[in-house]
Image (cartoon, rainbow, N blue to C red; front, side, top):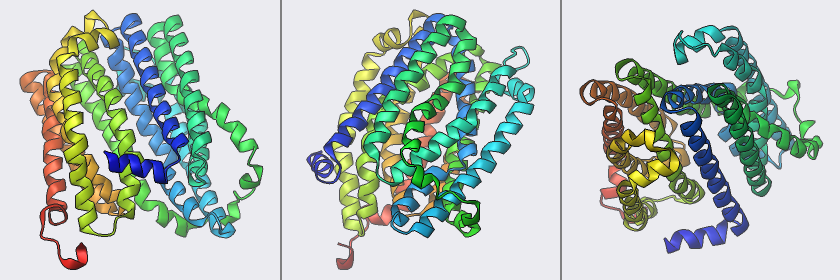
Length: 433
C-alpha cells in the first residue's frame, strides 16, 4: 500500500488523484440516489426494464464509438508533437466514429419497435424511448471523442471536473424525470443523461478551435484504422457482447422466474458496481500505468503479489462487512420490498472477489498489447457466464445467475494464472530479475 501511495504522489498529480476520487464518489452518490428513487417510485419490475435498456444503451454507445477512445488517447499521447500524424489520428477517428454513429442511430430509430420487443417484450410500448436514444447517440459519441482528445493531451483536471459537473447535472435530470413520469421518466433519463455532458464539453471545444482545424477528410488514413483495430476488437467483446449477454440473462430470468426477480438481480448488480468502483479506480490509476513500465518478470510478480498481500485481504474484509450488513444496505439503497436481494449477496461477493484478483493480472494484457489474449479470454468469460447462468437459474432460480458469476470468474482466474504461470510462479533467470 505504501508503494502505491508513493507512486501516486511521485508520478500522478495529487490534485488529479483527489479529483479522481471525487469523480468516483460523485458517481456512487448519483447511482445511490437514482437507485433509491427507482426503488421508491417504480419498484423491482421497473428496475429490470431499466437494466435492460441500460445494458443495450451501453452496447450501442460502444458500437457508436467503435472502441476508439483508448486508441485515440494512446496515439495522441504518442504523436502530439507531430502535426501530420496527430491530424491523421484525429481525422481518422472522427470520421470513422461519424460513420459508425450515423449507422447505429439510423438503425435504432427505424427499428425502434423491434428493439422494444427484444428489450421489454411486446406488452410494453417504449419504442419512442429508443427513438430518443437514437437522436442522443451522436452527442454522446462526440462527447467521448472530445474526452479522448483531452485525455490524450493529459488534460486530466478539466476532464474530471467536466465528469463531476456532468454527473451532478445528469442526476438532477434523472431524479426530476423519475419524480414526474416514473418508469417513462427513468427510461428517458437513461438515454439522455450521458449526452447532456456534451453541453459542458462544448466549452472546452470552443477554447481549442485550433485543434478542430486538424480534422480534415483529406487526412483520413485507412492504415490508421489498422492501428485502431485491436481497440475496436476489444470494444466489441467487452463493450458490446457482454452487455448483450447481460440482457439475455436478464430476459431469461424474466421468462423463468418473473420480472420482479429480474429486478432483484439488477439491484444486486447495481450495488456490486458501486463498491467495485473504488477498487477499479485505484487499479486503473496505479496498476495499468505501472504494468506498462515493467519490463521484467520479477517486477511484475512483485506488484501482483504485493496487491494480493496488502490490498486483496482488505478488500475481502470489506466484502465480509458488506455481507454482514446486507439487510441494512438493502434498506439504505433500496427499500423493504427488495428484501429478497439479501439472498443474492453471498455468491455475488465471492464472484466479485475472484473478479478483482483476475482482472488485476489481466491488465497486463492491455499494458503489454497482448490483444488476442485479452479478446480470447474475455470471450471465454462471456460465454461461460451465459452458459452457467442459464443452467443454474433452471436449478436454483435467480440466485443461479450469481452462482454463475462466481463460477465463470473462477474459471477465468484459473486460465489467467495458467497464461502468466511462468511469470508468477516460475523460476526467474538472472536476465529476468
